[in-house]
Image (cartoon, rainbow, N blue to C red):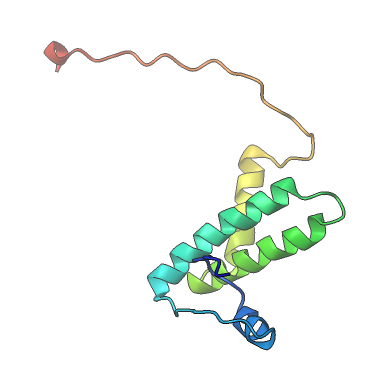
Length: 118
């Protein structure tokens, strides 16, 4: 029975399917399609991390990091640049060490500007 996937897979998946004697079809994506597929894969892997049990968490995080590495490579972003951005954000907003969950906060009221005052 045929099952539709239409998603980015690791490079050796077609070989693995072939060795198991099954039929399959693949397509090579353009760079733009690849980048979008990576973004979709990032969401898929993040969801798997979010629902993983403790025993599988490291494996799911490894999959997520593999997609992040591919995104960095595709967009020609260095790990060094990411670490610098991470350090900047930590300096401004902190990290997650204190386990703080924000329950609510008041919003500032925005005064509307009347057109006759313009």
